Structures are given as C-alpha cells and as structure tokens.
Length: 194
Length: 194
DNA sequence: TAGATTGTTAATCGATTAACAATC
DNA sequence: TAGATTGTTAATCGATTAACAATC
Image (cartoon, rainbow over all chains, first blue to last red; front, top):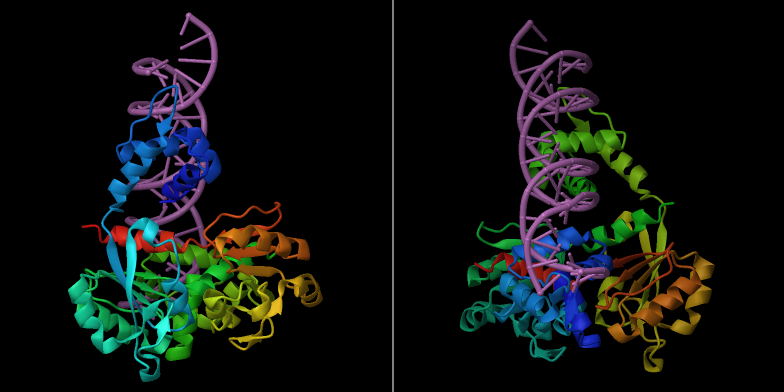
C-alpha cells in the first residue's frame, strides 16, 4: 500500500523507470530484504544487478490489491467531515468513487456539499442497490452511528469506514474500519511527552 | 491507548468498578496474558481472584501517557477538514485543546469556523509562543503543506499531524504523523476484494 | 569480466500465547 | 476452603534482518 503511494510519486515526479529494493527500503525505513520479499510475494520479478521496473511493480500492486475495480462508496452524514471527505481528491487514484452524500436533517436535503446534492437517508437503499455501492463512510455524530451502520448494512454495503467515536456493531461478513481520530492525536502527543 | 478508550466507555456506562484481564481481552480481541503484561508494565496491580480496578487502570494509563498535561494544538487550514477537526469533541478527553485556527486566504480571516475566529497565518508564531502550543495540525492542500510545516516548526511546534497527502520534511526533533486518508480507505477496500 | 542487485535460505529478534504457581 | 484471576516464566509463533549464491 505504502509502496504504491511512494512509487506513484516517483513516477509522477521524475518519470524514472527503475528502482532498487534498496531505494524503496531507504525511503520507507524498511529493510531491503523485506521489500524484495514482499515484491516477490505479489509476483513481481526484478532484474539482478539492475532493480525493479516501477511500472511492473505498480501493476502488480494494483493487481494484488484489486485497485482496478472502481469501487463505489457513499457518505452518510453531511457535516463538515462528510464534506471534507467528499471533496477529498485522492480516493479516485485508488479506484474509489464517492457517489452520493446522505443526511437525515430535512433542512440539508437538496443543498449542495462539495459538489454533491445532499440526499435524504431514505433514498440510501435504492441508490446503494442501483449503483452497486460496496463501501459506506459514516460521518454522523456518535449517537446516530449505529443507526447509520444498520442502514448501510441493510442496503447491502460490505465495508464501513466509521469516523464516529463509538464502536459500531455489524453482522459478520461486513468489515469495519474504526477511525479513532483522538487516538491518532494521542499517539502523537505521547511521542513528545519528553 | 485503546484500553483507555474502552475503560472510559465502561465507566461512563455501567459505572462498574472492576474489570478482569479476560474481559478487556475479549472486547479488544487480545490475549488476556498480553493485557496483564501491559498493565503490569505501566505499573497497575490487580487483585488475584478479582481483577483490576477500572479507576486504577485509567489513572495509570493517564500517568503513563502523560494525558494530564493539557497540551495545546493549533490547526492550519480553515477548510472543511480543518473545521471538522476544530469542532471535534473528544480531543479534550485526552487533555488536548485546540486553541486557534489559521488560514492564509484574506477573505477567510475574521470569519468564524466551528466557534473559532480564523486568524491569518502571519499571527501563528506569536500565538504559538504565547500559548506554548506544541502540536500543529495541517489541513491545507498538498501544495502548501510543506510551507505550513515550516511555519509551525519555526514557531516552536514539536509535533505535527499532517492530513495533506504529501509527505512533509521536518528537522529531527520534531515528530510527524502522516494521516493517509486514501490509504485508510484502500485498506478497507482490500478486505472486500473477494 | 567486474559490479550491482536479485531471490532465497538461515539466523535473529520480538511479540504473542500457553501454562501454572501464588494470591485473594 | 474452593473458585477465580493475577503475575510471571517458558514455549511458540511470526516477522524482520543478515548473508550469500545466482544472475544480469
């Protein structure tokens, strides 16, 4: 994952065609052995004495991660965070498209947020099914997170990215990624405890 | 870190005074041995046959993480994401206070965002020094991230939480936490590759 | 060929888990 | 005392690193 990010930068910038395991290792603070092992695992072969082809590696990663699939996601919660994520350029690079933003507050419906017309959660099931959405992003307040999760699961979503600070429960078969913003900041604060 | 989050919930909800390593382990999907070991390391002692005191554990964690210090942080970038973080309730629980929001766009200055009056980055050094701010949160576009980081470091900030998608460089002695939002979503997408 | 880097095996390291006597 | 859980040591597991023959 991080390899891909680094290589994409490489490619965009210099347009360099080759890279060695040593170079990657250095930038990502890893051991070159590990890099070679990882690359071998996903089926890229390098050229002894030369290194790896940036394009080969990127292709292999895309293949392995299934990055070509053009997945669709929806956002539930048209608050500031929802807006921030909706306007975030960068998901597209990984083949993920935000295709709708929902909220349950009547006064928000029909407003435009980051280029999306906010829709009532009532519409969620229809849209999710129609567009084959597999990912739901929850940016509602904690109190409503579980409810939003239910709605998403019922509609057929398979993965949930939860920004609310409560843990949510989902039937197994659905994966959840809990984004603990405070924990992130906390970890940082810990490092400067001196 | 996660222990604390869980225990805080426990306390808020049931008001239960005791907890066993087994209970914690179950909720957090860990081994009870590990929990006991971790707790021993930070200096909490349990009662054989009974378990641990929730308050004891929370105190020890706070102590160990230095959670009582009331650190201050500023946000650079008064966009949607900046606003979302500024209004995020929950940092306070970990002793971190957002004390100002900056931007460089003249038309934003003096506007109010999530209860903060947006200030020009020009004011940053003064405020950071005056209030003893140690943490900077970057929510500007990628192009300006490095510049923002410079400004923060120069002003005396020791830790940076970077939401821009470019990696930033800082002198050593400063810690950076790079928040790769796309990577997060990607990891999730990977799990439903089927 | 000489130099550089891969691919892979073996060695090391650390973290997780199992087990159990000590304790309440 | 009997039951439960801690604290800690030893065993296991996996992941990282070192090393080096094979390759270009």
